[in-house]
Image (spheres, rainbow, N blue to C red):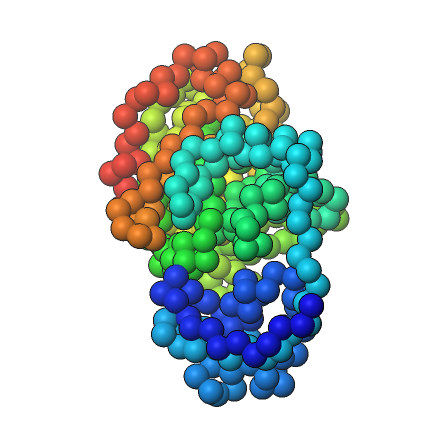
Length: 331
């Protein structure tokens, strides 16, 4: 199905998009290699000039799109039972939704993206939410597979670009709850280290690294003790300033109070899980507060997942208590 030459204006919602992403959005059936080829050969032009795939567009510019041969878009079969189940599942975990964004309450154990041996993941499920133009919601940040709680997703290109800037500028405010081993001597503290990835035989972990070490990134976390249960366990509220892989898990282990149920970073020998508790990661992305792309703010909170609620009930912790991490600085 060939197209003719098109001169397409860049709308305010599309400002900041990469050239290749712009073309991909306009023609979802176009292959990546085809997109790269028409841009690099100079067939696609912005305001009459050659451009590069990674260049970002500005509102008001005109993109000349050359004739393209497209396959007819494949419509998803209506009434597909598997798709309907996926839609129902996504609806059941939705904490907030408007025309631009979604906030999901991601269950513990559900991967956010695919990887080696991972076929079921949230990013793949978003396929069932494609609109009539072939666009689908897209991730703007990540959570570990075993971390439950708030996950923000953009429904529009405009929202995706705006939220990406928000996360890059560290304007997103995230609060996590964790159950850790032991009682921190300092009730409210700041953990500042460098983290680097270390490959092991069957897994990779983030280890504490030195400043200047190859691959090391600075990571900062604020924590506050919310409530304790005897001398063995403490409920902490955590506020990551940076967003490094496994940052909270590595930092809690570093200060000697690893998160209960953490298979990678729990480092206390001969420590026994109290009876009645499940040996699962006790980490919740409790709350996320970010500026809304169109003004105002998004403020969503996730409830305790079942295994953590079971532990809270067993330890008689009060989930309605005031969260002292609210007083932590932004940097």
